[in-house]
Each structure stands twice: as C-alpha cells, then as structure tokens.
Length: 184
Image: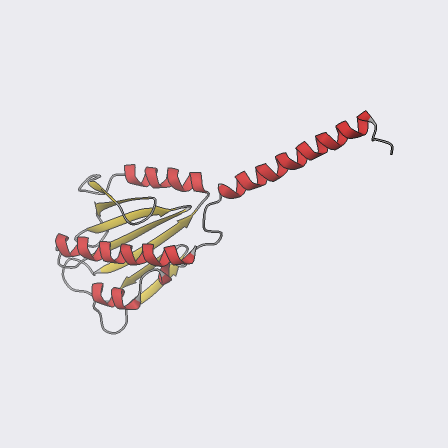
C-alpha cells in the first residue's frame, strides 16, 4: 500500500486541529450562554394564589405585561399607595447576567439607601433590599440570579408593615426561584 505523501498528512492534521478548535470554541460559546435559551414568562413565576394573598383585591388584580415585567396591583387603593407585586426577568449571556446582578446590587435602594442583605437558596447569588416605589410606602425587593437570568421580585404594602413586606417578598421570590428552576 502506498502511504499518503507528507504534504497530505500535514494537511489532514491541520484540518483535524482546525475542526477540534471549532468544536471546542462552539462548546465554550454555548457554555457562556447559560441554562436558559428563551425568556422565562415573568407572569408565570408567581402563582395566582400567592399574588391574591399578597395583594388582596376584588375583583381580580390587573396583570400588566410590558416587556419583561409583570405587575399585579388593585385598580383602586386607600392609604399610602396600593399593595403591589412586580416580577421582572432579564435573560442575558452568563457573564453579562453576573455583571448585571452586581450592578443592580450596587445601585442605591431609594431614600433608604443601598441597605442590602445577601441571601442564599435562591440561585447562584441573591440579595434583599428595601426599595422606594413611587406612590407607595416603600417595599422590599429580592433580586436573584440563576445562571443567565436575573429576576427582581418587588413587593409593597399599603400599610408600610416592613416585616410583612419582607415575608411577602421572600415568599414570592422563593416561588419564582423554584418555578424558574423547573424551567431549565
């Protein structure tokens, strides 16, 4: 049998290396994309039962979908502003999601300043902060990142009860993190 000429063996070797390099690059590129290839629905991350418990209204709360937000609030409210639940979802590349999370964490939290508390059990990283929401007594925001998705859950109460606002925001965020975990 005739063996391939040296030039042909070299060409085959270079092509094999190029193919390996392209495959490795594609795998690396895909790994940077994160777990989520499509945008999670922010309105599906918190159940109707949880929303009704946090925003007790009659009739049904009005859902507003605009871009990556979903907000539930009553049409009319008395006191210092309506109770409201808002879920915001942002899907990015993995490295961009981490940077966005850190940038959000560094932002001031309104009149109260950037009073943040790191949290666990929500995803790759998470924090809670008090958040001034226009037209309300303020609220609580839980922000967490799971892979390439950053989720912000905001909850404000008409009565300004910060303990109940903390508990409500944590419950809604825990449910959102659980449902998001099932979507991967």
